[in-house]
Image 1 (cartoon, rainbow, N blue to C red):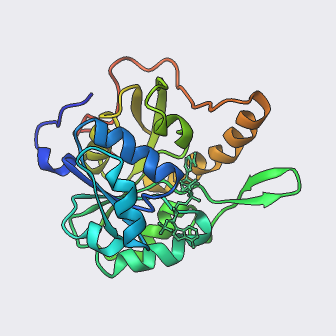
Image 2: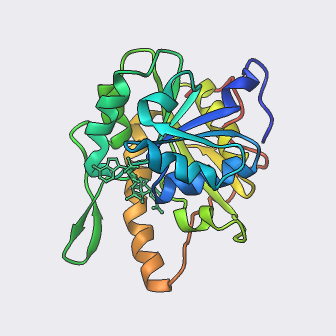
Length: 237
Ligand SMILES: NC(=O)c1ccc[n+]([C@@H]2O[C@H](COP(=O)([O-])OP(=O)(O)OC[C@H]3O[C@@H](n4cnc5c(N)ncnc54)[C@H](OP(=O)(O)O)[C@@H]3O)[C@@H](O)[C@H]2O)c1
């Protein structure tokens, strides 16, 4: 599903601001979206770094995080979990009701035998964001299982699912439309935001798999009737 659904404003998926857009995942997403014709705004704490990153991509622009968020229908957060509270607090000062935030954060810490998932007090990173953002800002969690390295390399073919959690079907449809502008990604509606902790925990598992098999594995759910993604707006969240 790539085209906007009935009732969904096509403009909502024309432009995306990426907080942490200079980083591995943020720049990987920016690369794919820019090459798919989306207006990408790369955000950073360092405007010059954002501008340098944007210069490498077609039609992209770069600036300080707060500046790129301004007026963007969709804002993606792609920062390490250690910076999540600080970053979301800074976003909360500028984001407006009606804007959609897609949180990609996977809470993990280095442990004796590799990266291990941790559970934030709120239940998940996405719910932590919800607690910190003003009412009226929509939140969807997604992308935790997609490798930044694969996204960044346009020679690599993507063929995997993206788990999406959120409290309204309309918000998930917007996120799904944007995600499926990246060829080879299929968005799967995984339910409300309070299940996001499950997807967020898969990342640490995949990091270990990727290290053992020396690859960039993603995930694929089987048995879904095609096309069966987040695009249906009439289903409950
Ligand atoms: N890497 C992957 O393959 C992957 C896959 C799925 C999900 N994720 C998730 O995506 C998020 C970003 O991961 P990443 O690998 O892209 O991270 P990263 O490259 O280490 O950092 C991303 C960006 O976060 C910004 N940032 C803001 N505050 C920061 C702070 N206090 N310390 C360090 N950086 C800070 C930096 O941008 P500025 O300095 O320009 O502000 C940095 O470029 C994580 O939550 C991760 O779990 C990653």
